[in-house]
Image 1 (cartoon, rainbow, N blue to C red):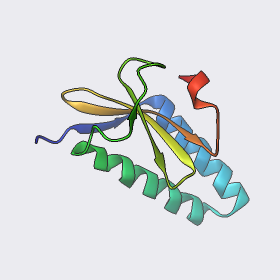
Image 2 (tube, rainbow, N blue to C red):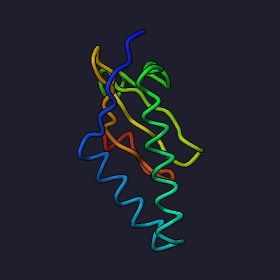
Image 3 (cartoon, helix red, strand yellow):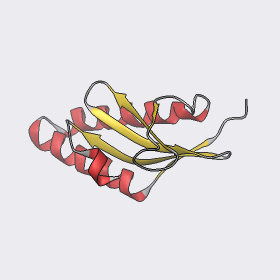
Image 4 (spheres, helix red, strand yellow):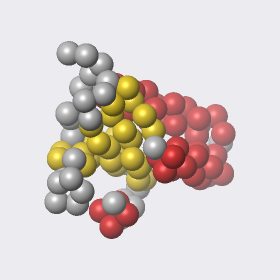
Length: 99
């Protein structure tokens, strides 16, 4: 199996930044950075195990979603060459409407 590139869409990067800012204000910058690093490492693992999660073609063709540590929903799409992380939704956000 050939590894795919893992790409964060600009919206996903913005989601990570917003989450960092929120956690940093509630806890500390160090705690926020540790959490963001864990999310990024988790998503980087999609390079080989790309077809994980649940297919949600009912929302958007090719969309897949998976949870991270019971708090973040990762929305992504898989092509032959890459996995694109579309969005990251924290703590029960209504991700279905946003996609």
